[in-house]
Image (tube, rainbow, N blue to C red; front, side, top):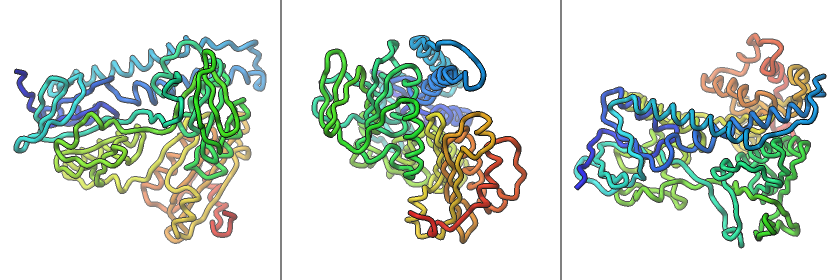
Length: 463
């Protein structure tokens, strides 16, 4: 009989909250077990941020090489070695995961169990779990199991070879024509990357427009630069059937037939909670399997926390990592809450989208007196000097408090610059402070004070 492993803290899943939480608890002298049934590092390290941003760089180099003549540089024909680009990506993933594993292994109070974890029940003050065949007894449990691709019920799809965000990155032979179902962040990022690596790409969005959670002009801006690169975007019609077509696939999209060599399904995410046996300890979940928490990230069961994507408080690496900081601060007597954070994120198309706080549509619905200022990237000097003029900036301010309530940027360095607004919002300072601050020239961010000088009441602008 296998003896139970008794610990202070069991962490199930090794996404972005887990390793740092495990190390921090271990360095406090606690006994910690980290349970992982797949790869250490979760989505971000293995098939999310690390590989896709590495591959994005290869795609951008190819794109800029094709544009070289615009800058007075002649390079001749540009050839992409698709397999080499994918292998470069995998080397970066392996290095990142290896570094993480070494870090965890260096902490003597952490035991890493490579198995799927699940609850068995309770015994007094202990939570009882199984990690494969190994029983575990823990005083506290943290769930950080992440999400996986949601595959919609499309007639014929189950009989057609299709890719998700994981299997797409296993390819070493370049697709002739990649068809993407889903016009949101994963679909658009990967569609643009594969287009730049030499594939024909068609993106299908069943809603009325891509990036539907963004304002219409933001979506239009993104659609425009994708079209300029030769990406076909079809929006507003459902995919009603999928079939094989020789060695490829064919989709019925409204009245159109769309054929391709490969199919990527990027239509949302599902939580990895079905293996956890949450009912054994009474942890509540919603109809889709997500685990609700309070602002301290506590579930309905005292002693169990849900971190990262599964708590529906942000499907991002940075929100997962922030979750672990909140938990640690509160363990140390603090009073931090996820309810207080202002959501910020980026979509890593090129140019990228950066968003924080409210969109214009949300601001209009808020009932607040809102001021808005907008500016086109084509009027930003640094963008013109770099020949990177696609995009726009929108800033939203509460007229009664003088505080920012949101901002959206599409354009050069937008993923970095949006954090100027995000961090400023965290201070609660007046927008007037930013307007009067000294900027650096020539930069994109130097235009923020200029843009703020254009603030106008939102209710005077067309909806």
